[in-house]
Length: 173
Image (tube, rainbow, N blue to C red; front, side):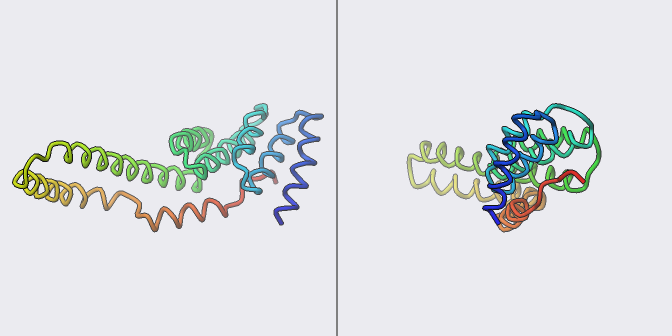
């Protein structure tokens, strides 16, 4: 099946170079997307001239998916928002919410790493170490309860990432 997409990519590459139409670049980008070559897909999407709102929406949505697959969550969020500015779409809204959850979890993870590094530097004695651990556990429990409700678990992230990778790009009718 992947060979079919590679063959279609070659055909669309020639077509895009000669026609330089939005549809040709869009089909080329979707071929790359289906090959799971998201960087090339993004390049082709970027070359698309703006022709109509529906095609622009699909391009932005697919770019959001590509950036999400590449774990470039800030860019994915940006493109989902741009797509939603054009029109409301359940898939785009869902993906945007998933990206926001992932970014929160990532931010918390980074904050925890920074806190641990800082804590390790400040520990001078066993008494201080015990005291800091108790305080950290208390604050982590309180903050964790609320954050846990809003954040995506690792299992949910894997499930969503797999769903995203298997999701077909929005295509022309």
